[in-house]
Image 1: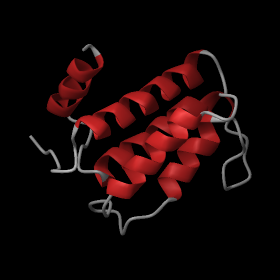
Image 2: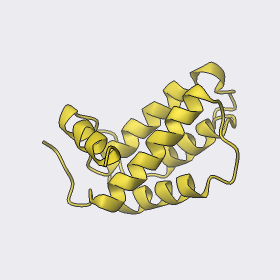
Image 3: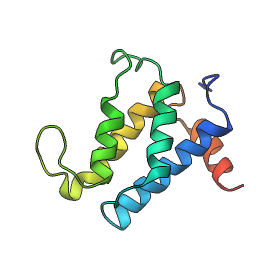
Image 4: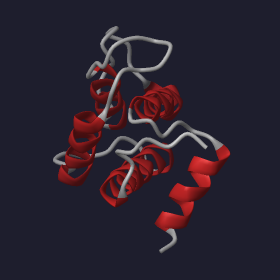
Length: 118
């Protein structure tokens, strides 16, 4: 199991908040500002993030892209995320999870699910 030392209760709570935002984005549509909980969760995850293994050094890009996508804003390429918004957001979420040392593996997903069920 690959688990970073930074993955603690606060990290799991931040991930749970992002998971809920992704769910709402997919089934309800773009979120409405201010979404302070999501902003705080993304800020915390960025603070504990490291380099993206196999991709490159730490960057804000996946955090900014995820925010723009769930808020229904055009992405940096100028395109409208439209129906693919949720898929693109989940791709950025996977990158964020790699950066914090909690990649999407069966064991990590079960740990997060158990935390969310508490």
